[in-house]
Image 1: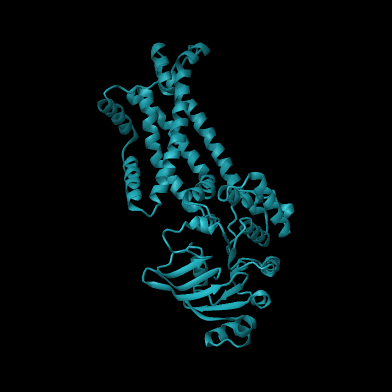
Image 2 (image 1 turned 135 degrees about the vertical axis):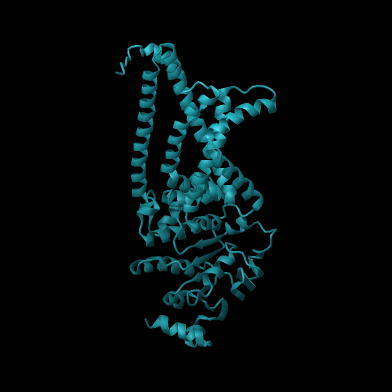
Length: 244
Length: 222
């Protein structure tokens, strides 16, 4: 059974179709990178995975549980699916420690001390232990994103979703975030990553999904995708982003 | 000329006539503020919901309250409720309930703007961590909305404090009433109204100054 399975997912904003019959799956321990030109529906697709965006047709199944089923306890499912956003979305009115423990306490019901310990351990892991008592606004973008990854990990997720995690960062901060993600991938975390960072894809991705105009145009093993993408659109895209 | 004489305003007179009214004005302001913000927040959440059966009643309530003069609401509530429950409610209790209900309409518009000022991604982040609607609002959105709107909420409270003087319409004993009674008893109405005006000014103006300070601090935090 795949960890994440999408079957013919279609989505409309009123009459405008943003996703057309998208199907793919992510096996346990697999890392897949979703790329494509802006407006191709990558972000919408990944938000359908944990039901942050509703979809009108098709099915998304996480670890055997259907996301679109009205009987599914969506918050309970989301608690086990980590998500990292383009704009970090740390809670600005809470300290870093509080950011890391709030959902552990309020959603998972862990004790405050236990949650704090777990949070500090994860801060250590992303190299930010010394920032524990600061507020998000006092951290750089790269640091905030690393805290956001730690926050998602604090929930002991069964898989992680990344929605353009480095797009809002200054170039010199991209690598510190990618390093954390690479480490995570090498430890066997199941990951679905929307990104333009082809270096990251080459390094750790197992498969690459290429989207254009709301469709999954290409879904290949990494070697095949970088070797010779079949669609002309993907070839154009690759040549633009690899030679800039 | 005016021939003003404030000599009669001894500490004993002030504490005998004015203090009781001053305490009530402050009580009325505090209760109407806390109750109004609580009720106003519920109304704001209702109006921002996607369900018409929540949106419409909330919008109807807010628009009605904001379209009727406060003094009329005070009078109507004072006159109508005894007819409905069969016994008089008392001017003070009646005033407290009326102000809470009335101010809720204004606070709700402020809270609505505040909630909308919080980035949508924050809601998504709450949901993505497994929080439910109530948790996301209580833990993530409302604290930020409240912080963003604090200066406006306080400004509304200053207006509320001034408006409490309208309870004269139903004879409740507030700050203004205290001065009025003292003025009548000592036959010095001009003096007492003058002192009352100065007192309202000093309180409202210092609160405004406080709000301005707060605004600057919030601007820095952002």
